Image (cartoon, rainbow, N blue to C red; front, side, top):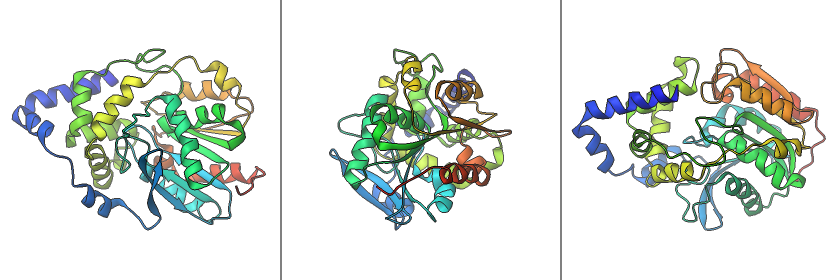
Length: 314
């Protein structure tokens, strides 16, 4: 599937000719305009080790905390539906990962999986949060469970939504150099490529809306993000996670789309088998982002899961 996607991007670029050259050289969207378009009243920039991180902090400040992290090339908006419900009872904190969204590139390039896990703790420290329920989708899910391994006393529970962990697209103990076409796509985010990406992420094409097209394209074209994506891939490894996963003791909810073309369902069943006592919920006809494509059903499962925990405010 990935090879077909990359071939399509290559054909688009070849056919585009001069348009491709223009895309590579055009400046990214004006940052002030992006912030005006996407910042919300609950948003702020928080200094995390020298990087200004966009954080959206909603819900009662004296309630248990839920931290949610998005996937690769995405942004915190992916959790809008969940946050709308969860913030009625819980303090919901989400942030644009380093090298993503309005956070933008990290001067320290803390992009490896281990650095992203440590970064979760740095964000919590900056917000004065000692412990939380930690969740994530895809790359964000990888950071979540690795943080649970790194700092188990700070993780009240895990929510893993189509979380990365097992080898995929040839990535294992060593990084894989991204093809030239992928680098071009990540740096330019042409509309056709953005649409193709969303159609791979969602099972139902009706979710590939103009808003999602604009959001993904705008965030990808934010100045510096394309280079940050490429730098992230250059550091990205997926060594055998068996030992780490077996050490996780936090209550864990795993959510997966049966039609996930990015991380197949087999990855979800393996995570479920590897994390003792975990729960696995599968949604038929749903792709890589169940928090959007099965928003109502999945957030109800999350609420039921949280109700079964003895959570305390930090």
